[in-house]
Length: 165
Image (cartoon, rainbow, N blue to C red; front, side, top):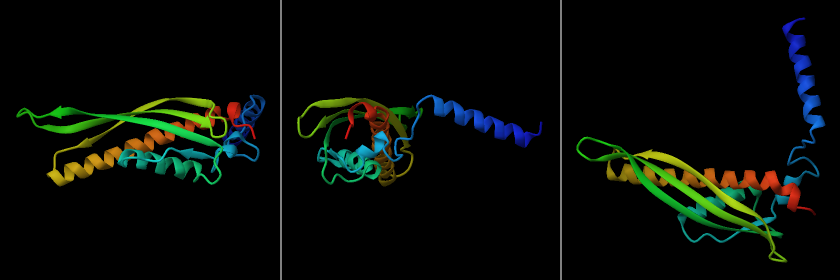
């Protein structure tokens, strides 16, 4: 059996296995993720971190036009020095963050799903003060994008249970 034929057979086996498990793409026509597009209104941001989080949520889910769902969130972050020189100067920081979020139906106010997402990112503080501040701001942006992506993944994973049209 040639290498090409093996790959073809393995592809057919993988296709048959996923077809039998009930897997369907979230964004396929009629898929559960389609109901989320332009239908989730995140709470208005009150600071830079929240603005970055909501911006990424809207990139992934689309801007709310006539939203059916409301997303509330609470962001917490902490900065920890992780690399310290012998003369006691911190040269690297970890920025940890979490978002407690709840999705509810806008008409009834019923909580549909929710949870907590956690992650971290790091940045270097070895340059000038301006470079350090810029690196910290970039790390905050990256962290909010990571956390927003985790929220979207959880919404997509559970949307079939609560996003009936």
